Length: 250
Image 1 (tube, rainbow, N blue to C red):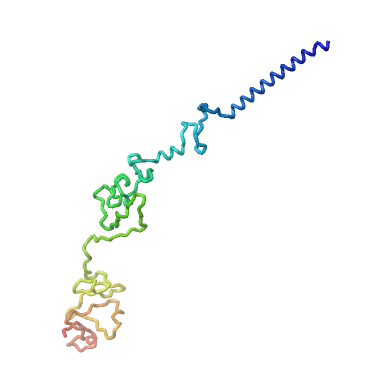
Image 2 (image 1 turned 135 degrees about the horizontal axis):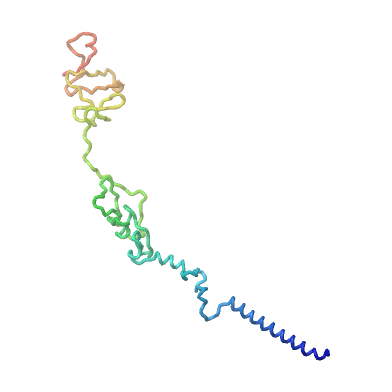
């Protein structure tokens, strides 16, 4: 009885061992394929592979963000850039346009509504001019559009916009007699100086007995005109008249 069951048990054991070996082999093959890329085969389209490991690829659209960013700013001509940009030929990139009164070498470098004139971006409107202050431009220094020097404080030349100021009239503020018109002098009035008329014959004048007292007067008078001298009034010998001085001929 026992001898008859031995072959049956051996057959069952060999069958289970073969089934287990087949399952393990299939699992190993599946796992091996899961972590390896097939050499020489086409890659799975759902997992794009880059030729260079340093370049990051995106699943959506399969775009290289590094290459796209560079290409969007690269140019060969100004027309390839935006409206408010120009193409820097030496580097082949688009840069922002230059605003008014900035250095330039061609019209395309200036922002819309401006043009390049004498190395500066100026407005196209002919009514907009600069008469009072003019920047000195040095076109010879603009050898290359990306190799020119911009001075932090450009030299400026003041251009006179009107006639020279006239001489001060009577009552106007002055600093010296040369600031006043003919027939006037610069004399103190309170704490400032104004143009006053030169004294004529018979007008009351101030006799300065000592030097330096002329500047102490609050209401200062001008001196007598040429040919006149400040003297004591004649013909009246009263005490008040003796102290009064008038402009008299020599």
